Image (cartoon, rainbow, N blue to C red; front, side, top):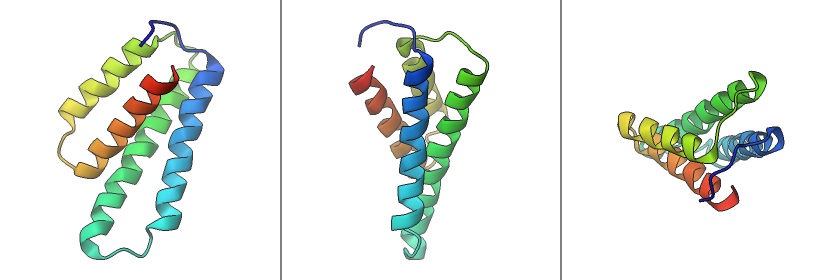
Length: 101
């Protein structure tokens, strides 16, 4: 991963990635059984949480690098490893960050 500061349009890509994944979860998995619905609910929460964080960074015009953001997400993953769905959302966001920036 190359060390660089994220621009506003790159943060918008991250926000849009989280938003579309959250919408896909709601559309595709709203009629699951009780065992699976909890996983998808936490997966949805994970994407919405990071959408809010990326929106906050963008609105405040904070300068952040892709490496700092990756380390922040990794730190959050290590602290919030209670639910499998949230962990899956964090891995998805981390992989998207590594692949695109």
